[in-house]
Length: 434
Image 1 (cartoon, rainbow, N blue to C red):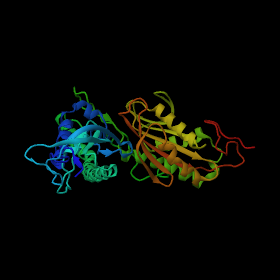
Image 2: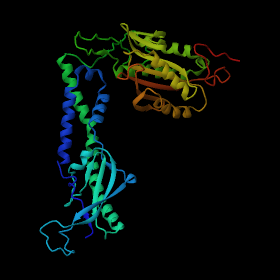
Image 3: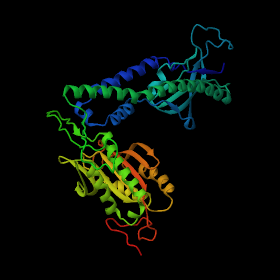
Image 4: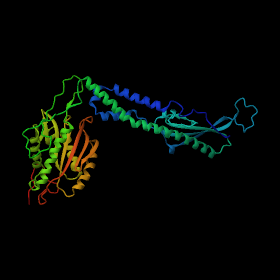
């Protein structure tokens, strides 16, 4: 025997990995329970769940085989147990000159994972030493040992380590995949307890009331209601619930806009030469006809003037911008514009994109990328219908605040002989016939 393994520790022989991972989940739960209550309430639950999942996720250890290096130094090795050698007294060590050959294998990931037992194991454990982020496997080689024999022995031992790391990675990835869901469950439960203890709710909706004198000629079932915000309950706690437009009411407002476009489609010649301002006015007429609230146009709000703004008791509950489609950049500019109008309290937004160019199908195909590539796009992009798109955006000045944006694209009637038929109709001006 000319190659002797250095008596390093056995790898993957410590605590069961499953027990360690369950302990990490307990730590995650305790961390959420200890998180400052006001911050927890003022942070979107999904963002907080992602934060905790990333904080407690483990990084599997992966060997960097391409960076393996070898060192060699003079040493001695005890061969008293080598029966192939003539040794008169085997009761004590018998040393001969040898080379200490150490293979250095860098890795990325958590070094502690080399000490834990995965769910799958074999009857023999690999050996080696973990020195910071490096696995070291060493051998004593006598002068008779061939270099290829040493290399073959190393490759066999490294393959065993790699198998164990694959089992560890499988267990770790399964653990990581559950963290966000676990965190969200604990966050939601604690939010509920905190709100109950303060006698609060997460947000205060705007119940809508039927308007008895709404015109029957323009009807959307169950949308003729008044937006009546309920004031938040008095509280000395840092978290104060904000009035919010319920998603059902948001959809009702969008339905009014959609139905107005259907009217345009049924009477195309009445609308074919209208510019943005005139088209917007028709939407405002219908919104004011369906709500007892205040739908206004060109209203100063925060950092500019928005096209359509519904306000109740001094609070903005809906902001919309009307724009002619002139390519993806024009839509992104409209998103910038409506975000500029949105204050910290505004959470429901819309863009009404009028198309007067040829090829409406191509226009619809370009909208998703234009939305998702915007700098403030956050998550949850969805195509609600053939020409309706929705996403969650970040507030321009506060990333913790989320805004829902719906883009409604319409192929509006067009007089091809009018200026601006290509989409360049200027804001607030009618296009003139030649």
